[in-house]
Amino acid sequence: MISRTLLFAFAITLLLGCKKGENDPSFSLKSRKARLTGSWVAESAEWTKNDTTLVFDGVNVEISDTAVIDKLGYSINMQFTSTGEYIFSTTTIYSENYIDSTLAGVNCNNTETGLWNFTGGASNTKTKSQLLLLSSKLEKTCSNMAVNVNTTSITGQNGGFIYNIDRLSDTELILIYNREIATSNGTIIETGKIKLNKEDS
Image 1 (spheres, one colour):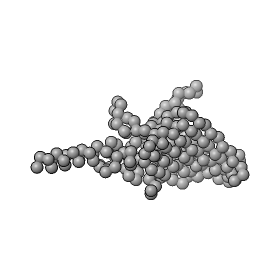
Image 2 (cartoon, one colour):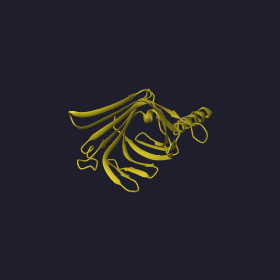
Image 3 (cartoon, helix red, strand yellow):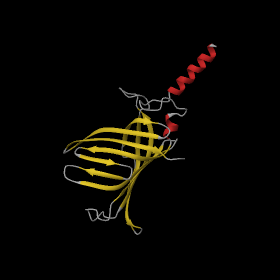
Image 4 (spheres, one colour):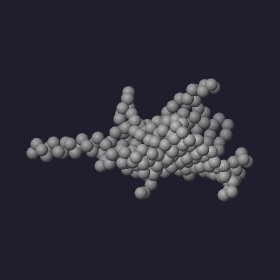
């Protein structure tokens, strides 16, 4: 009887131990690493950068500040491997009548690749409650036709970014961040929240 009780308690501890995040499922048979591994597509997102706000509805992003409102086609995809690599890609689609004629009808793809890892466990953060992305390559390709392609590539360790994991289930990932960047013109305050759904494997 004692053995069964101990086995049951161990099983419950194991299942609950995979939760980590406040909004994670109550229990899961998969570890956080197994849940994160795979391809994700953004359903919605919202960012602010000082006076500029960007709202993404899964198809378009609306950019607004004190004077201007722009609406662009947009998409966000993230892929994580079990061996610690990631690909973060975005696509921006400018309409044919876009106000900046140099961008009218242009599609731009941004791809960031590098290494990912869980972090956290310091101060008030729980272990594995944050996601660290260490970029090793940035590539931007813009084109308005098959023969008119402009590609910019930066290779080498060029920075890291930490997201707080608000929720990580088998099918849903919510990432949030808040950071301050000191510049010669003052401090830039950035906040953001991205909700992603896992693609069927």
